[in-house]
Each structure stands twice: as C-alpha cells, then as structure tokens.
Length: 509
Image (cartoon, rainbow, N blue to C red):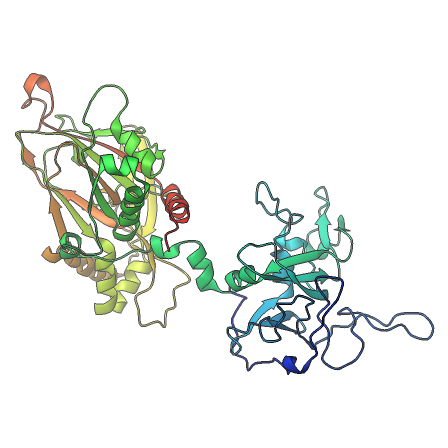
C-alpha cells in the first residue's frame, strides 16, 4: 500500500465540458476517447500501415474523459484518467486538486474480479509474482458498477496475461524456467469508484479495518475512574452475554485501555467453568504448560510466587515465551475472611510514552536492548529475549508524537541475568522507567470481589498483588481456600475479529 502515494499534482482535467455529450448510443458504456479529435483507438494500439501490418504497441499518455449514453451523464460528475508510463492517475470531481496515482502492476495484482478472487472463499487466486512487471492497460472504459454503493466503475483491459510457474521447476527469476502465460490477452478488471477511493488511501483502509476501535489510549488511575469519561471500566456479565452492544463495549474497553472488569460471573466450582465461557465471549482460550485454565491459591510448597501470600510485584506473564499471551483473565471464586490481597494495575504504555517525552535517550535504549527472561522450574526450561519497548517499524522517528508501541516486556521476577555486554546506560534507563511505574497516579488498585473477572492486556498493563493473610487452605473452612482465583489466557486476533464483525453488524461508525 505504501506505493500508493497521493500526489499533490495540479489538475489535469481538460475542457471536458466542451465535448459534445454522447447520446442515443446502443451500448451502456463507451471507450474513454481522446480529446484531440483523432480517431479513438484502444490504448496501446496503432493504425494499420499500408502494408497491412500494425505498428508496435505504445502507451498512449492522453487524458481520457468519460462518455456515457446514460441520461444522467454530466461532464463534471465522473473522474478523468491520465496514463503515465508506469501508473494511472485518476482525478475525481470531488477532489480535483488531488489525483490518485495507481501503479499498473498494483492495479492488476489487486483485481477483485471472480477470476482473481474466489467469490466463495474470497481468497486470492494468483500470486503477486505472477504479474508481469511491465504490464499496461490496453483499453479503459467507464461502466455501470455492480457495487451497490458506487455508481460507476473503471474497467481495465490488460495488454498481457499473468505468468504461472511450473511448481516442479527450479527456475526462480524472471519466470525463465517452467513458466507459462495463463489466461488470454485482454483480461478485464473492474474497479468501482468506492473500491478505488478506499484502497488507494491508507487512511480509508484503516477505517475499513476498524483500526480506530483497536487503538491504545494511555491512562492514569483517574482516567479509569472518571464519571462520564471515555473509559467504561465495569460491565455486567449478564448484559454482555445477551446484548451485543454491551459485548462490543467491553471488547473496545479492553483494546483501548487494556483493562476491564466483568461483574456477576457465577462462582460455581462444579461442572463447566464459567471463566471459560467468558474467555469464549472475548476470544479463545490459549493453553500453556499451566493448562487451559489454572488456579491461583496460597500453597505451602509453591513453585511460583503467585501461589504464596507474599507481595507480588508489578510484572507480565510468560515473557519467557517467544509469543507471550496478549490477554489474561482472572476470575475471583473466593475472597472471604482475607486481609489484603488487593490487585494493582499500571499502564506501562503511559509510562513508556512519558519516558519518551522526558528522556528520549533512555527510551531508545529500552527499545533497542534485549532483556532475557527465563523459567527453569518444575520440569520446564523456557527462555527468550525481548526488548522492553516493541516499537512499530512504521513509526516516523521524526514525528513530534511518541512512536507507536505494540507491546511492552517487563517482568522482574522472571528476568534472567543480563548479558555482561549490556550498555551501562541501560541500567539507568531501566531505573527511570521503573520509577515511572511506581508513580502513585498511575496505579489503579482494586480488591476483586467474588464473581469479578478482571481482563487485561498482558503485553501492556502490568499487574501486581498486595500480600494477604487468611487465604490459605489451612485458614479456610473444611480445608477450602478463602482466596481462590482461576485464570486463563486468550489471544488478540480473535478479540480484534469480534470487534470488527460486531461493528459492521451493528453499523458502528
């Protein structure tokens, strides 16, 4: 998509209004003709010579206005097209000073016709590498669009077919071995006006993909708790189950702020676990070596600090994985006669952006230095290195705004010894980031109640727990724990999928 740069060219529209409108033509469409008054020829063709042979095809670079037999024809209501050596420039009447420039190879590769995109599976039926590098249009025609949301479409007849490799061949470059052309000359691609405007504009592609609904909003504790604010932290489980608008609200809260709490989730401990039902509302359970679901209880022989009654400092889970899980769910099944045990959440994204504003050098060190994490216990040996800040490579380093951070990796309890070659300045940078995470205004503290399910972004929001007493099995009635959480992990793709589908279904702008 990055090749589709919108060029700020001066309008190339010639005096279309001076042309006589074509009427009473038996066909519903006509070839886009030249303005020179010469015979209208298909693009790339030439008149026959006296010897009866044709001259070599050359690219016509004239401007082609729209001719229609339709009574709705208006010389100023349809786009004009200008052929360049390697791309097509279209000018829409709604934005005459901003033509869109579309490379021919991109247009042919992106053809949405049923021969190129299977109408049932909607999967592409050719490879980008099958498109000849020098492919060009042979004929352009404006036709009535089959797209119900667009009136007109541009039909392009191409001057050559696609290539197809013989999969048994070892030839790689230039389709030189085992390659043959498939499809006859004159393949016709049709692009509706809406299609052209959408796929030529990256902002409209993002709008189509609902990117704004998936964006991250940095927060402090006051932002989560503000009455009437954009954040809507708490949702009723019953409402989310039966109302798709409520479900969409909870999903959007999760992706935007990285934290939401469902209330009223049943705490039955027999039969199917309700946590799994919650997970399937949002996404799908991701199984790890802890199993699909796991328990957080205070145990005498704990092999993880989470299974004690001690303070559990700010951290993220499973950073010793290559791809740590995106979201975590914690369901409070029991919290009786317990002192302490409050959950703490901190938005590491907000802290990272603050560091970027206050100390760019420290930010860059954390974005470029690998930190090792490991878990060597209970028959497992897992280890992986991650950068503390994962920055989107498409971020503009010259921008005055913080770069887009896609994930953060911070988990001191599971950090392995740093390489001895780690730059000394990294330690100071990490200390600055840790100090920002400890700022009181960034910490949201909440005591989970029975029936609460906290859902949070494990690649962004740090979680911690205060020490507690009275929660062990020994303190509970009949040996039952007084403090019992059940947890699981889910992935981001299904969450984003549900958001896009629900927004489309509910027609959310």
